[in-house]
Image (cartoon, rainbow, N blue to C red):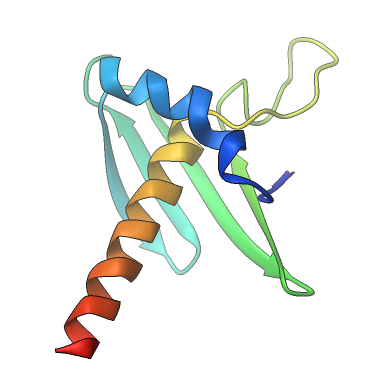
Length: 98
């Protein structure tokens, strides 16, 4: 689980999205399924709010390391969901202001 704190956390992961676009579907509240359009792989990405803090978890190896004793990292799947949710929020704000 990764606490979302700064935009910089997503810069490197977002760069990967240019090479490997992702498809995002909401599976249930707070849970999104992200499919890599190039490779066809799919991973669950969960966003949670706890005590006014936002956390994100991805089922891929970078987001939930199993093979090595690593710390979870912001992956391209998590970045895709965050970018998507920010875009939706922006569209809703613009629609409400008109």
